[in-house]
Image (cartoon, rainbow, N blue to C red; front, top):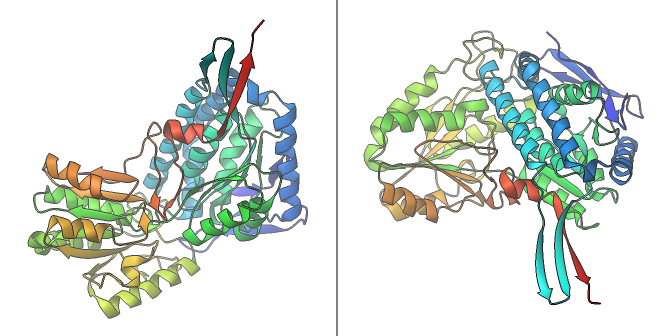
Length: 484
């Protein structure tokens, strides 16, 4: 089964890369080529940015919120009508089980529908300064926005970042991740091929090597804002390059999130939640609960239950309805994870896993058995660094203060989980956790209406919600003297 062949989409047309070169995308379950995309370079970046700039300056997209809402609603409707096709494309390129792709695409539609409403709520304000002076504060779009998208949740995160930018009146250039570009381009094709009233140049998309193209976008004088979700080092590089032209940057970066489990938790619920937090999407999640901070008095039975869940997960082909965990994205990612696993074996107790999984037809894919380590040193790389794979590190504690200290012990601060039946403890500990999202008695709950983002080195700015919409706007102060 194939995803398809995609050109770049620039200024209302599907076009080859200027170089004429292409890339192949492979299914990480078995190494089969499933997609062909354009291999873009600096010349393609220039064309896409110029198209977006022309559209921003010449079209009335920025000044017609009802029209924007109508176009975005049609895009959401098309996503629903083509739901199964999009989910299959996503699974074939990412390797994730089909049920996970369905969850992701449903979430994307939720962000779309929230943005439709947001497009018509871009309110300003007024202030009486003196008897003869009135100040008017208006919100206007930033201009040309570039979305550099990740491969782990390519559909949800592309929509989460690009839809509010469009709803606010900006024009857009999307740069999908190379590993999952076909799924992104299929979603973009739904809009640009089926909604003829979309002005040309408002939406543009180019594919190709992320590092090279991202660097060009970051320094490009025609770009007003960049959004990026991905690794910490790449985010810092984008921020440094963008500073040369003082363009706005919104970053959601890595995480090393802790699930803090107290002895008074609902153990079965906590075990299931902690397992899903790290093994969903094969652990390739910025928000993954990759550390379990566990009260020592319940460590024995909790770990036994967690081990049973991990060992009971069926690894396999993405379209097999029985598959519960897919492969990691690519060979380089697999080799990186296996190196971390070897570090873990040298400094902590291996509870389960710790090897490349090759059974049940998985020998041609990049599968790693769900892996759990117990009590490594706090300064160990498996505690401090983002592994981005199905590897869980357990750290045990005795007191509440120790639990908070362990939860906050890394440079990251994206998410935390907290499991307790005590409301007082839940509130007190939540306030002490240095992370932008805290889930109590569950894990990974996002909503389009609610802002999300990280503390410390997990990023800048917020996505979703009102703040995630308004970040795509500038505030203009118009001060009027109407004295006669």
